[in-house]
Length: 200
Image 1 (cartoon, helix red, strand yellow):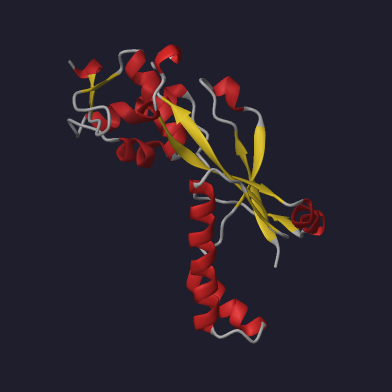
Image 2 (cartoon, rainbow, N blue to C red):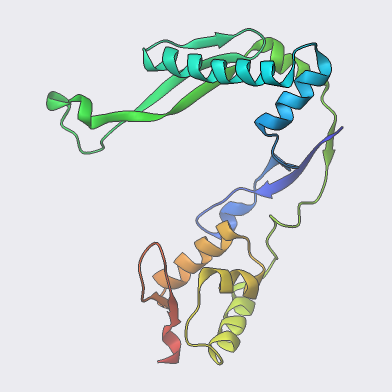
């Protein structure tokens, strides 16, 4: 089965910064622990219950090793280690354990695992759900005027439907409109609600 991918514009502060592209896998779905358990069971003599027990034990052992300050290596898979973060305003001379927390788990794949992907079957496909429509500023303003002629408020999702922009581009564009005084957020930062200032 091919690995499907598409090309996406790199996010930038303005449209001129969005000309460079990057490739990204189009994820088909999520493989769950149940899916893995059943697949492993079909390929070996271990029962589903045995596979489930081993996977649970691996998770427990990984946590215990990382929690004790070790890195962990699984042959054929890769290396796991913890990454930490420190409070941004902490005084280096007075750092305590309360100023530091676990940021995440780093994973570095084994070379052998990566080598398998050298012969991967890659296929470009258009991911319509992630691409934004091409629209100039004049057309955006016309659509805003039409929208606010009939509506008093706008949410980000309304702007996405209005312009065809994806979430990332819509958020950047709205920030530009707020900075330029076209829109104003009258609610909170995390639950914004915008009004059209040029109506006033």
